[in-house]
Image (cartoon, rainbow, N blue to C red; front, side, top):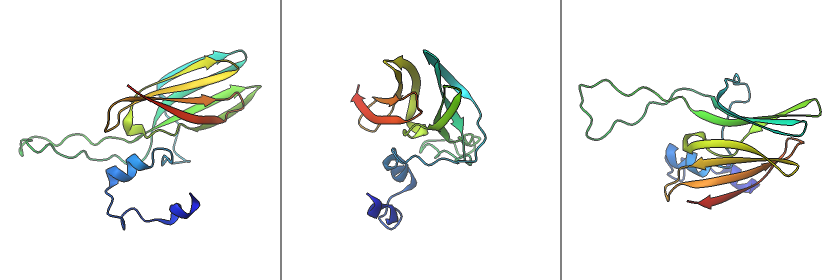
Amino acid sequence: MDELQQVDPVALGLDAGTVGALSGFGVAFDADAPLIFGEIVVARNGDAVAIVWSNPEGEPVAPEPAPDADPDADPPEPEIPQVLRYALLAQGTWSTGVVPVPGATVLDHQVIAWADGFKIVVTRSRSEGAAIVIIALSVSGKLGNAKTVAL
């Protein structure tokens, strides 16, 4: 996979939307972005607490005008990109990270206590239809492999 990191998506003729869809498990985020908690979900498992939220990050993106839009109408408001983040408090230590699902595709997100850790459950839109993505989150703050189930 490392050899693919040097490939220029523009040179391949991919537009920004396609690149964003393809980078679903390499979600771009701003490590220095302020944490602004929105759409917060919380779960507790023993002494561990997991929090998942939608964090606004990056510059607002102007949506494409509809082909049949009135040219005299006000343009749509720019959308602020969202990144799905998590935080975990276990044994007095905080762990944080980014859930590897493109924020623009997230329809809903939940976190549930499961066995000795947590499951992050994301309902997302895809071109082939909606799907649920299930990702394990250990009490050490590590994400497991994602499992996708088409709806």
